[in-house]
Image 1 (cartoon, rainbow, N blue to C red):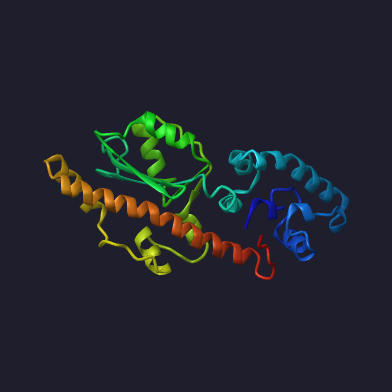
Image 2: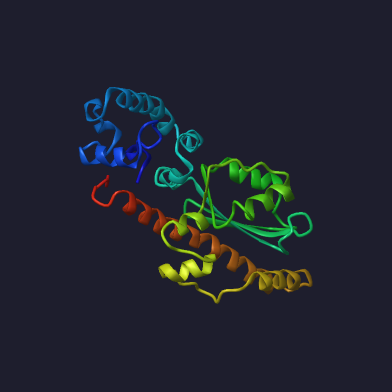
Length: 250
């Protein structure tokens, strides 16, 4: 599913009308004809396409995040795949003000990077990473990762945000990240470690065990990279649910 397949941001267009448009052949904006709907809705669709086109060409994800209903923002992913920042953090606990962020792993455009407390994990580096991204993808990041980073580093993370915890639930995948990974067949290179184990590894590193940090970083990076596989899977299933009888392939 791509933005150019979508009419759902237009007032008066629900899923039924959108599906009727696809069935009639208007599977993309360039195939839309006002005669397929009434004049009022048709004019709104034409105005939307006209206003949206330059934002699409300019890679303006913020514009579409404002236009699309929250429940349909997953449709932005395919257009902004290369600019999607997959993010996962490790901390010393659950309290944003008492505990601290130990590592932050980010994966974008096929490249993965991990920032470590006391080395290169700084507010300026995080701001640069966010500024160079178009979408943010996490698992439970709306409730945990993002508030933690905003509190610890005085950030305002305002990227359009796709939280896979909630998107996965919509296709029947519930539980934590590891449980969801197992449900869709994602295999890990190393055994899973718990949040408590992640804290223990950090404490061992603080006492001088470099191998403990390497293990923690590898675990954090694998969490982050796997988010892209999960995103591809979930968006594919959402696409199939929205378009059961229509081919929107490009």
